[in-house]
Length: 322
Image (cartoon, rainbow, N blue to C red; front, side):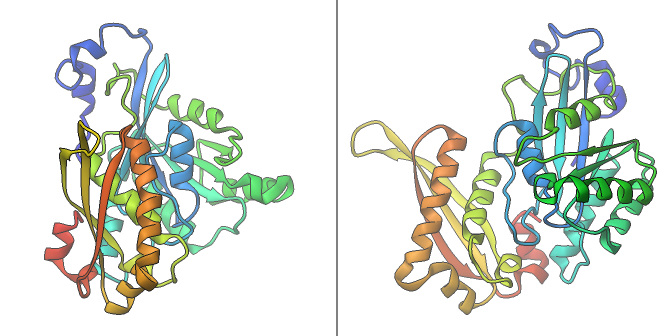
């Protein structure tokens, strides 16, 4: 991931198209904020809430996020680019190691780091490890105390005290992405740490992720619903091809061909379900999300293949985008 340098940002013309910088306030701010935290602390849900549209998939399963997903928040006075990262965890495979490497690299390339700490949980060794990694970058740290709607006022107050004792955070903000509580406040806080800069993206963009990456992620999210604990780690999705073909009622229809990879035949049976029932449910759920993303009807063709131990195979990891 290569973000523009400070010199490039200040120059403007080299990284920002002319039509973007024609009109913006003299004190306009633009830059990057990185979301970090243990798996399932609400990073993706918070990113979606701040952007105002779904761009990052969410699930109760660990390692749901496997890519850095950039979401763009547009304001009259600023443009905040949120970088949602995979959850830091103790890696057991080559994939896990590479995901942690992605997070470490991202931490060095942003203007402010948001450490997500759920109000529902006690602070543990994983949180301390993540904070130490983030603090080593010397980048301003903001603690987002997430899931306050589930914790209640008393537990949230205790979580704020615990977070204040964990590190020298520049700001602490209790927030609930689900309830919309203090989401705008967190945005205000993050914008205050951004440098003065022209906008970095066109006003209509909400992400710079390629469509195929988002399509694959939505299919994986649909497949993760209601599955056994071991499957999420072993499931990967690749968009093999997209093409427009004539539709029966005239015009054309976008056909999207997707392959889901698992590591064992038993996992393939879980994904497909009896008589293909579960695979049809996955296709239907994913199709609605993809159509909302693309703003058009599509034909989605999903197949399942076994790629033994793909999480430990460098060649397969490369083909799958890791």
